[in-house]
Length: 201
Image (cartoon, rainbow, N blue to C red):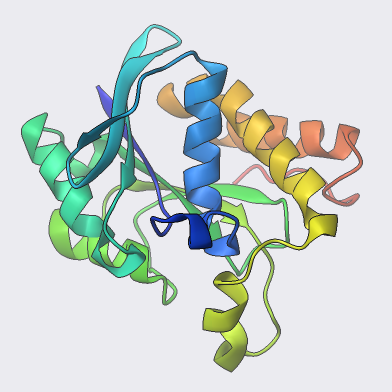
C-alpha cells in the first residue's frame, strides 16, 4: 500500500490558496479513480481505494500546514508504512507555475508542511512538487502562498490537477521521469508550460 498525502490548510477560507494545490491534486486523483467516500480519520480526511491495481490511502491532513506530520505519522503507523511508501503532493515556489518534479528526500526549502512530515517520519518520503511560481522576494512568500490563485491561473491549475490524476499510476509504479514527462507534454498540448524540453532527471 502507498499513502498519498495532499498538503494544504483545512477550511473554506484556504481552499483556493496556492498553498492548497496539494489538496486539489489529491482530490482530483480520488475523483478520477472513483475513490470514495472520504471519512474523518488520522486527524484529517482519508479514503482507501485502488489505482492501477495497487492499494492506496489518500489523506488530506486536517491539521494546519505546519502540523501536517502528525496526521501523516498516524496513518503511516496504522498501516505500518515506511517513509518510502509515502508520497506527498505539495506546492513548490521554486518551480514555475504548472511545472512538476518528483524527488525523494532532500531539503524542505522552508516548506512548513514538509518540515513537519520530516520531523515525524524522517526525510526519505517521495515528493510531487507542483510549481506555483515565486513572488520574487522571500519576504513576500507567506502572503503569496496564502493567496488564492488568480482567476487567470485557474485554467492551468485545473488542467494540472487533472493530468496528475490521469497519470497517478506512474507514480505508484515508481516511473518518476515518465510521469514528469507525460505531465509536461500534456500541459504543453493544452497550451500551458512553455516550450522547454521535458526534464528526465
